[in-house]
Length: 498
Image (cartoon, rainbow, N blue to C red; front, side, top):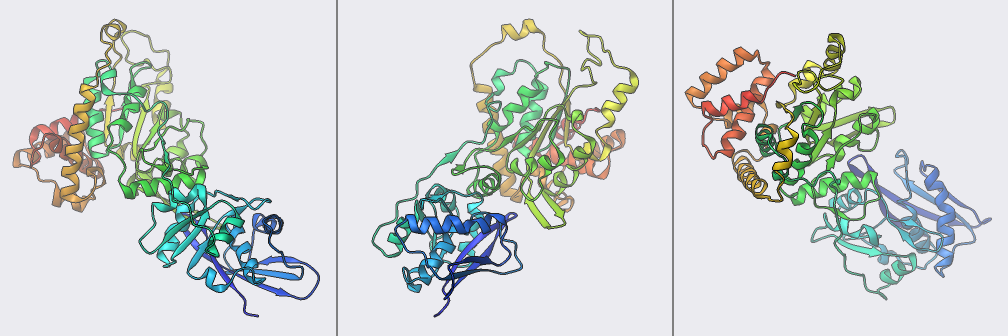
């Protein structure tokens, strides 16, 4: 008897690995064995598959069944292979034919009653199916909207709810259901503010608009109650909608760690607490907060309260827009192209330099507090702005429900972003040094002003180029074709010493 083959895949990092399921039935005592380096979850699938086949009114073989998962050196994890193994057994026993399985990939977890449950990381599987030129992908109905994001004209997505329904579809007795689009909102409740709701703070609001327009990292420093968190929460509402490619990447990342069945259309806004572990921030096999913030905003409130080693771990992804995690069991790489917005108090009590409150901190406490932020880390932050507290009397007098300022800023940002992508196909903040020389055109007066400020501020090479990139964003907002001296001067104002 010819050994039938079915095909599936398991997520592996930001991609997926193809798995070939081979089955064999021989005479002997009824025994169901799975080989090919399965983990505990895959081994336990034997009982799920046996019950699912019988409860779907189909026959499970009474002889010895051996299932091989190839390649043998790849560790098989998760319940992704339940469905392809069950389909392979049905083909082994003649309940399905080889023609029924041709050019098809199967993935799904089986319940004991034969229902098919949704899985994480299904877009990874769908991308691999398209890349390997499969014509049909059968998967849990709840995951179909995600898989449809990467479907091609040559790959059809077939959502299924049960093993019995799949059998009927393969036998062309039942017709597949259309894929429904499900949208998932990733913004937190704190990411719903508008610029008009922030009273005063015109310099800080201007800095925020510039930061969003060029995807520059921003650090806000000021006393408690100055409005730093409110400013940060405005950023996602200023960012443009996700492109199709960005939506796919964001959905892929979130579907690996969350029970996500919809499609992400809004830019992520991640705000981990300062007690978060290093693994939670950078990831460990699965994406961490810096990858979940990809295409959106990573907000770190009270930056010096985070552990020093955690802050230092941000240096590489802030520079390379990717995080690579090496462990004994393998090496995983995930995108981490996020906009960092961080806030901090000037000292542990928060009132150093305040005119209204007396600071209770000693010089050594202030030094140790600020020392948590290393020079190399601060060097990777494009803009630092001091935020002063607004008087309570002013706050009461200026309450408004208008969104005119916010709408105007959003239009400016959209124009600036269009200018950037027409010129260089990327955000200003992502320009490399060699690209800055080619793309950022300074007038002679602006170049002279830049050199003067560089000497005065004692800028490192990285900070020097960051100053040019911020000046370019200011020029884009002003719809200027070249960087002028006033653009350089304004960019330098957003480099306050912390």
